[in-house]
Image (cartoon, rainbow, N blue to C red; front, side, top):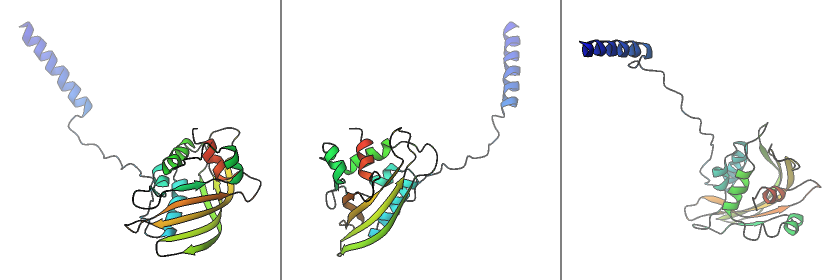
Length: 196
């Protein structure tokens, strides 16, 4: 008798619990997670520049990394920092690779307030061949990082050497950074946020 009474109470409790929780009703599906990526297959040199700007705006380190030659299917990447930064941080840039590009970019952290942006101006094409292009352009790069004492805006001139790999996909294989005004250059950020 006691067992039946206990069993009946357990069934009553389970029935009430089941009715309260709506275990067998469907729920509305959640919207898909936003993939903050507008990486375009780099079938031309100009697309690499767009991908570079988009990766900054979207704070996407993986897409930023994909803009650089990895050396496996095309030329080995080389970064030449601005003269004053090269003198001050020579050990940081002695063996700079695309992986260091990714690490520096990740070390910028999440933007604190505002949207990062990268703009190019005074763009010139210095050389063109079937599998390479050399651009010279001024840049302005704003990134609202959280590190105190470090500017959130850099300016300079970049010479970008872009090449097509064996699959005809383009990437940056050489980058020369130059100071144009008294402000800090992109090289400064790479040195400060490199983690070295």
